Amino acid sequence: MELVTLRQIQEAQRCLLDSGLVIQTPLLKDSQAMFPGLGHLHLHLKLENMQTTGSFKIRGVINQLESILHSGELNHKQLVTISAGNYGKAFAYYLQKAGLVGTCIVPLTAAESNVLLLKDMGINVEQTPTWEMQATLDHHILEEGDIFCHPFDDLQLIAGFGTCALEVLDAGIEPDVVLVSCGSGGLVAGVAAALQLVSRKPVLVYAVEPEGSNTMWESMRVRHAVTKPSVQSVASALSPPCTGKLCYAHCKRYVEDVILVSDKEIIDCMKILLDRGIKAEPSGCAALAAILNHRVPDVEGKDVLVLISGGNISVEELHFLIPK
Image 1 (tube, rainbow, N blue to C red):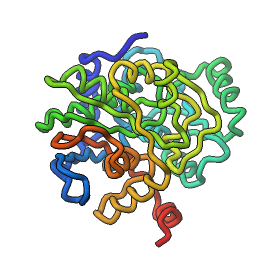
Image 2 (image 1 turned 90 degrees about the vertical axis):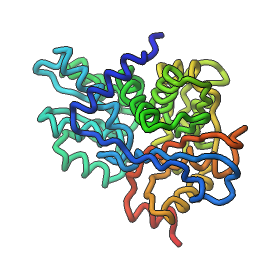
Image 3 (image 1 turned 60 degrees about the horizontal axis):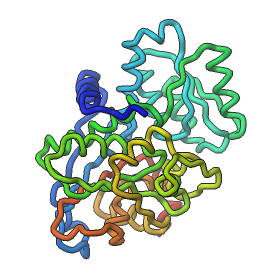
C-alpha cells in the first residue's frame, strides 16, 4: 500500500500557504507549568483548536480538494462526502470559498447545530438513517456521477495533516514523544509520517483513543484495520465504526503504540484546559488526557508534543458535559 512521502507533505504545505484558508496555529512551548504534577518534562501544545474551522481537518481538506481540482477530474461534476462533524465543516468551508457545489450526507442522529451550520455555509445536506448512508452515497456516485471525497482514508488528506508536524519542527521544537488523538487515524498517520521522515533523532509517536472506541488499538494488535459498529464515547469525533486501511498502514509503520483513556479522563482534561483559557472539544482532549494521567511511558526529561486537535463545542454542550 502506498504511503505518503515527505515530498507530498511539503507540497501540501505549499498548497495550504497558497490557499490563504489556514493559519499557523499557536505552539505553546514549555507549558508544563500549566499542569502541576506532570513531573520533569518539557510539554509543548499545538493548538489546532484555533484553526480557521476549529480543527485540524481543514489542512487535509484543502490539499485533498485542490488535488481534485488540479487533476481536471471535477469538470462539471459535484463533490460528495459523508460527515456529521469537523470534516464536513471543513469541506463546506472550502466549497464556500471556492464557489463550488457539493453534498454532505449526514446521519439523522447528527446534532441539529451541525446540520444548520453546514446548510448556512451553502452546502447541500442530505440526512438519512445510518443504515442507508452507504446506499445514498452509492446513488450519488453511480447515478449522479459525483466525486466522492473520503473523510479520512485518503493520501492527500494524510499529507495535509502532516503539515501540522512541519510547523512544529519549523518552530524549533524537535520532540522526543508525540501524542495525537485518534479516530479513524488520519491525523496521527500524517503527523507520525512527517516526523519520522524529517526528524534527526528517534521520535516515539503515540495515538490516543477513548476506551469505548478503540478501533486503532485493536487494529494494531490484530494487524489489520478493524470495524467495530458498537463503539461509543463522549468524544464522538474519535468514535468512527472503523479504522481507515490507509491510516492503519501508516500507523503500523510510524506509530509506536496506541494509548487508551477513559471518558472521565477526557472530560476532566477538557475542564482543566477550560480553566486555563483553552476551549477544546472532547475529541481534542484525549491526547493531553493521556499525559495528565501518566499513561505515557518514559517521558522524564523529554520534550513531549501534544496536539489539541479541535475546539468545536458550543457553550450548551460545555454546560452539559461540565455542569458545575
